[in-house]
Image (cartoon, rainbow, N blue to C red; front, side, top):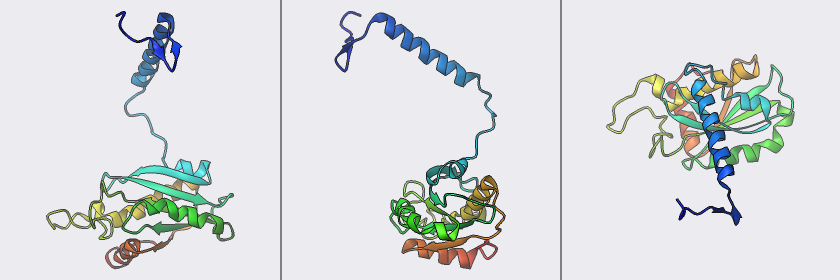
Length: 193
């Protein structure tokens, strides 16, 4: 239609450029549609191998909840590199700060710091601090759905991706994260810390 604005950021758009953009978009969508639905997705922890600091999204298979995992590591990770979990307090936004604080000190310790961010959106109220052991009605959830056991699965995923030989991890928490670690010690005695 003639009344359709053809200006974008002060530039006039020709009908030809609009057709080119539409053709490009259609081609991109057809490539996505052609990809098999069961195609192997890359391990999200591969970000730890590619970068010395950043984040990746881990969807815990036990709870099916997404967890943003902030990380930092030494410049040269080796098979004997240790994994250190830093558990945030009741404000999940402090997970990123954990890596910011740790990064200047990790080189001599040959470590990867993982700071999983248990967002309020998926772990409301005290669910994170209490390890997500009970539902909103107060019923005990299956152990596989606990946030406490997500740490074990995350450890396995990063360990495999990085080719690490260590079979144990270190874990520390502050404030609500310390409560999380305390419950991990009490309720998951098989945990490998």
